[in-house]
Length: 492
Image (cartoon, rainbow, N blue to C red; front, side, top):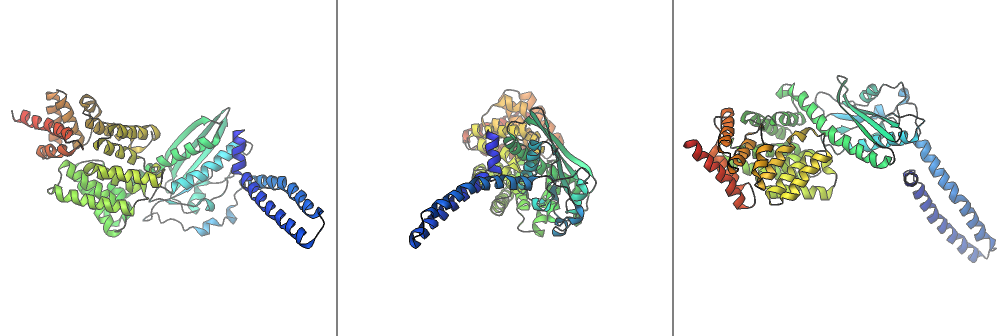
């Protein structure tokens, strides 16, 4: 019954019925006025009422039938396909990547499959527009369905796509299986695929869940593939968009030289496009992490520049999840209260904004922990972990839990969470956790591991940095004291 009611709404039966009742009432009032004014027979308004009553079920039937015809599968006629002339083919060398969501395939004999396939195609297309830096071919430009012999990748290429999202819907007993793939049209290689198995009793709920799951993953996959593409090109040939992808690709190597190169790429992108929010956001994040690690000769100046760039990114990229997450990251490293404020403003304005860049949720979680709202912060990180298990940045989840547990001074857990990380900052967090949990020898060994990787490591810098790690100065003092005692042990 619930599905039938939803079908009535989807097919606009309720909407047309309501409009008809309103129009019928107005027509009846006009008939009464005319009858009284012109002294016409009493049967006039009664006849109008009867005709209107007869018309009501006819309108409902026509509304249902019209929507059925609109949703019915049709065979694609490539020779008469007008959308190809409406969309310019993508310039694969310099343009932002374009993506086309092709109709999910389903069996014509199964209405549930057809409804789910159509709904998923529409929803994924709409939601992908939230992934900034990616051009989405409008749904109106794509065929309503694909015939058995249609070449999906050729259609996507003709419509100007670099990437094609394709999928299938199958009902097996009381289960619904949805499979979807992302293919790079230029080399015909599949870049990502995923299957969803869900109960078929509420197709509208699972349609929403699957669409959001696909889009939240696709954004990260496209960024990763485009970053790899940018790395294969000479830097002088890169456009602003590609430079930011190159910076994103190398920044996670997390060494002084890689952060320096990423900083240069972000600055060049800003020169090419001064109003490019992602370039400002990346520069802010890189500068803030250089100051956190002491990998600059002027910590104060770069920290101030990081805040200015983050403020600008937050202003011009307020609706751009791709730019918001590095902005939130930059803030939590140096000004966590601003990070929380930006996160809360963003979800208040657009509740689903971080679906296109869910890593922002985890970054915000750390910021909450650093301003004394540890329970909320850890809950946010867990939300990110549970809701987006396939996000490409999910490998960092345990690190973020470690940062947050450090705020709670849960030292044994922090030491476990931050074991074998690839970031010097994380290593120093673990050194503190080991020192403050009575594992002095292990702390010295951990520090020496990082000193071997970076002989120029600045212990005195970290002693000062951790004093401001938490809003509660006593927490920061305790963390910093762990490194003071380490320094004394190293000198002994």
